[in-house]
Length: 168
Image (cartoon, rainbow, N blue to C red):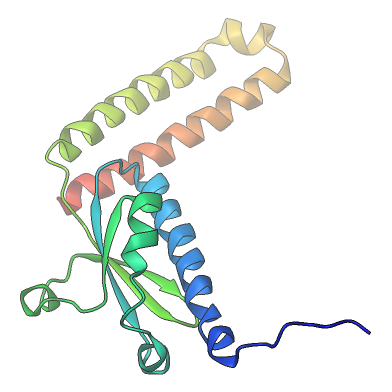
């Protein structure tokens, strides 16, 4: 007969914190990668009341999180920060949400302008090719289609950047 160790019910009830940690790590890493953020950021975690009640205050989540995601996590938002509206919200179902304060990149407008210049130049290049009768006569239809797709792509990228610049 096999002898299994006795299961500690209290330990099983704490496993959800590991799930929370893993979900937070995955969510924050994904956010950092999409936003191209390399520096340390502050993350505010708002747990639902159910999970807040279960949270063991002696369990230091930052002990595990900080080395893995270069982020300090807070479970209570300071009063002065509560009025701040510039947060990115990440849903971490069923636990609650993460709030990451949006820091304005001082070079953001310059970077957008540079991208816009690139897309305008490429748009003109593709447009010039497609307006060139010799190119249309000699180029395979697949190449012409590829240039038309590029033209549409560059036009869409220019539109998106104009929208972003108008919001600044």
